[in-house]
Length: 113
Length: 116
Figure 1 (spheres, rainbow over the protein chains, first blue to last red):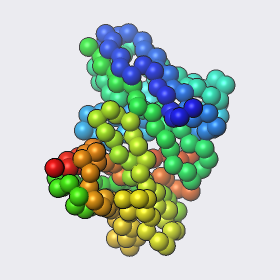
Figure 2: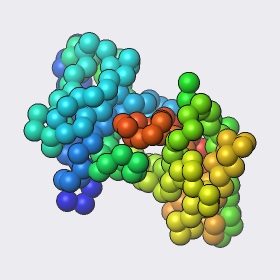
Figure 3: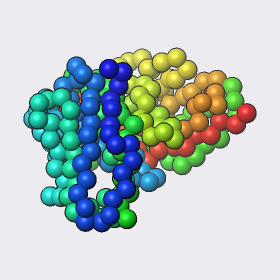
Figure 4: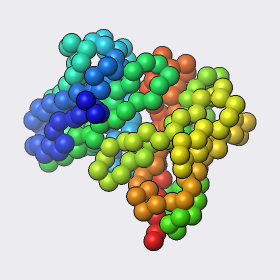
């Protein structure tokens, strides 16, 4: 396992459709994060898991967004009834413990048309 | 509220020269961490360097060094001997508090272009 893996790399969907992204963190990392990055901006925090527990959610994460990490390994981020404003790069990151750097995946670029 | 400010939208540097990318931060926490990440056009955020708020020495990692001035709340990244492969977006980020979540707050980034 050489890094954080995200799938798919690109997703184009029609407005109103549901989409699901997957993140596989570095295997021994117990912390997993989702960020969203829009054009010209830095990443913004969405949510955080420690093992399987979702410990924090940003106000950016509307009711249409849900994230899971059922076995404390991979995570999924689902967006229901997508809107054009959801178009962004969705980045996943993982880290081993507190006070250590987070390693990011290559992201999933979502385009809602 | 914590905030990261990067005032340079873009920078040019000649190959083999040094360049400084500016970052200032705002926090009321006593314990915090500062990070720099590189984002090439492929999209992946690559960790470069970390500075803890209690670290007395400036962090260095190969050609990267962090000029940490706590009183001025600045954490500038210095890249020495620039290479063409250094062309990318660079983001400064801050970890809130004592690392309970490791959640990062990012600046808006600086686009660095290295010219031959």
